[in-house]
Each structure stands twice: as C-alpha cells, then as structure tokens.
Length: 332
Image 1 (cartoon, one colour):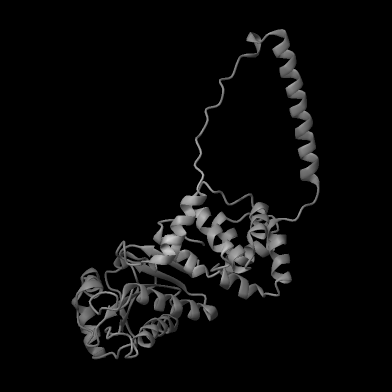
Image 2 (image 1 turned 90 degrees about the vertical axis):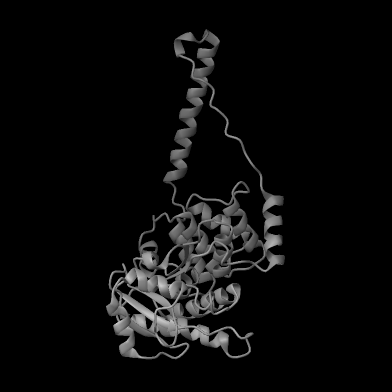
C-alpha cells in the first residue's frame, strides 16, 4: 500500500529512509531527534550534519543511516507553533514535500515519517496530523513511493469530539452480537431407526440434487470481481491510475487484478475500491460479494465502513484515520 499509518518506533522502521524532526542547527536534540541519533550509534552522523551546517525550517538534507535499519536519514526542521498565523501550516507541509522529493532524488522506494512538530515544537497534534496527510496524499498523486506515517503515542491522533461521538453512537446502535452454536453430535448410521435411515437417505438425495444444481450454476459464466471492477471504472468515467491512487493501492497489485480475471482480493483491498469508486451501499455490497465478502453489523470494522459509505464520505485517509483511532486494521 503506498501510504500507511502505524503505531511504533521510527528508529526500527525498515524503509529506505526515515525522517528526523530536526532543529535548524542539525544538532542532536530531544524526542524523535535524540532517539534517531542514539539508534544511529555513530559520532559520524553529527559530523555529517555539521558539514551541512544549517537547514532552514521546511527544507531538508540527507545523511547516511549508520546503524539504523534505514539506509538514509532525511533531516527536516519543522516550524515552532505560534498560533497558526505565522505560516506554520505551509512550512510544515514543506517539510513533508521536500523530504519526499529528496528521498526520490536518492532512489528511495520507501520512507517513514514521524509526526513532525507535534512534540516540543508545540504544533497541535491533530492539526499536525492533518497537514501531514494533506502533504503526503497530494505528493502521492504523482509518485509511487511507499510512505509510512509512524505515530509513537497512543493518543497522538484525536477526533473532533462531535464526530467521535457520532461514529461511536452509530457503532453501538448498529452492533448485533452473535453467539457460536455447537454442532449436534453425529449419530452412527447403524444406530438409526428404519424411518430415520429413510429420512437420512432422502436428505442425502436432496443434498446430491442441490449439489448438482449448484454445479450447474457455477458452470454458468458470471461476472468476476475483476470484471465488475473494470466495468465500474468505465461507467464512472475514471482512469486506471485515478482509481488505484484513490484506493491507495499499489500499481503492481492493480495490474495483477486487471490481468487476472479470477483474482480474489483481500477484503480491505475490495473495500478500498468501493471507496475509490464512490459506490453507494448496495453497489459496494455487490462488488464485495464478487470477492466473497459482505459488511456485517457484528464487526466494528465493517460498521465504520458502512458509516462512511452511508454518509457519502469517500475520503480514504479520513476513513483510515478513524479505523486507526478505533484500533482497527486500515484499508489497503
């Protein structure tokens, strides 16, 4: 998936590059910056930074990764929060954009970001997150980079309270729990009465007839998931590129789906296409059904997806943000 959000430690990310929320003097600092310098475990990192000397807010420089799993560290100084009227949002977006450009210049295929400026620089966490999403999603419209946003703190992302309450209320009002039932124990055929044996024979005959009918149905040509997806793309007047970008799907995976008419995607991938194509609930269920899936009121993940589709909100990044906050798997 081209863009993902994970909870974790950025110093442990196995990407081609990781991003350091640096200071302009490029010295070892606290927080993310200090953790990256410690994990790099080499005085040569500071020497390399000293050779650059200085980096303006919103710009970026690159160094080796030393003992980190990542080959490179991209250092970008984020803005200090001064209320939002001093160009902080624009400078923060520049941190992400310039880091992404630099990564591609050095041949990187993957890059991991922390939530820049959301620590000691005081940028409100949710606003910092939204600026990150805005900058990354805009850049990925014309790039195939794999980008990961690493959230260290459990509560780093928080909803606007009204939206949070509304989604939670929807989940609770729609949820239908279910209990697993034990199967009845099997009875040996020799212990059955004559009538039970006859009934069993009739049921077996019906089963054979139903299986034959099912085989006849399956033999008939039916539109596959891939065929229906391609038809819907044409009907919606969208291009392939526009579709897989909106769905946050890798180009290679999309090509595999297009060329293999019998391809069965994972549920999250199938849902991502429903979101990309802006399908209503019935259309979404039809497309999901082609891959053998549905949306159930017994699962929080499914209810969140249903909520957004019913609200006609097809912002995949906002959906993933919500899934992340509710500790559910993201759409891929």
